[in-house]
Image 1 (tube, helix red, strand yellow):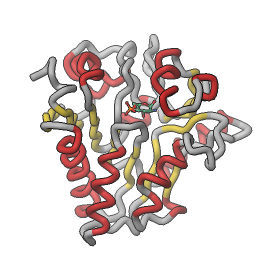
Image 2 (tube, protein in one colour):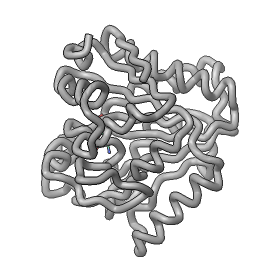
Image 3 (tube, helix red, strand yellow):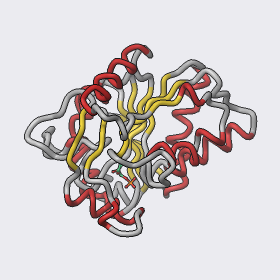
Amino acid sequence: MKVIIAKDYDAMCRRAADLLFAQVVLKPESVLGLATGSTPCGIYAQLVEKYNAGDIDFSRVKTVNLDEYVGLPVENDQSYRYYMNSNLFSKVNVLSDNTNLPNGLARDVSAECERYDGLIKELGGVDMQLLGIGLNGHIGFNEPNDVFDKGTHCVNLTKSTIEANARFFKSIDEVPKQAITMGIKTIMMAKKIILAINGEKKKEIAKAAIYGPVTPKVPASILQMHPDVTVVLDEAAAELIK
Ligand code: GLP
């Protein structure tokens, strides 16, 4: 793992955005694996800035997102499709047909999971996958477990994730209890991975993910086994690993 420590959140976002930027410049038809949550907001803002400056072209880029809540329509401002449209897709020249998220409203969820893995395969795999990390070490929505989950699947969100994500909803009762997520195998098949971590709250989990034992109890720890991972942290998140 390559570890980059940036001064603060803005600097962390610039470093992560630079890696995505370089990926698209070097391979304009890249397949980008994208993430949601508060961490990547500033990274997307940086990419939008580069696009507005005329430095990056998304017209041949294809995107696949990590996950989507089950049961939220795309118009719901907490759906991950809504998040991606408002933070990135509507602000750059990516073609809407080239943007993909799991369909959280699919009637047949297991068929949808199969479709999503098939789609990623058809696209030739993910060139660069951006990841955030949950307080409990989840990546995508792969929650701590006894085994590493493999392909795209439906998960029951843990109490800690529901509580952590309640800040985005009017009340905790509105937080969906399930999500469709790329599995650990799907994520590990990406050619390159960027893991972005910021904030004091994440310092313990950052240390466990980067230097702790590889265990499904800390799903992000599996990234230690991937050949091309760059972890970009701000100083607050890096406090225990400096
Ligand atoms: C969500 C997402 C993850 C994200 C994580 C952390 O539950 N499914 O992809 O990395 O939470 O979010 P945040 O960046 O807001 O801390």
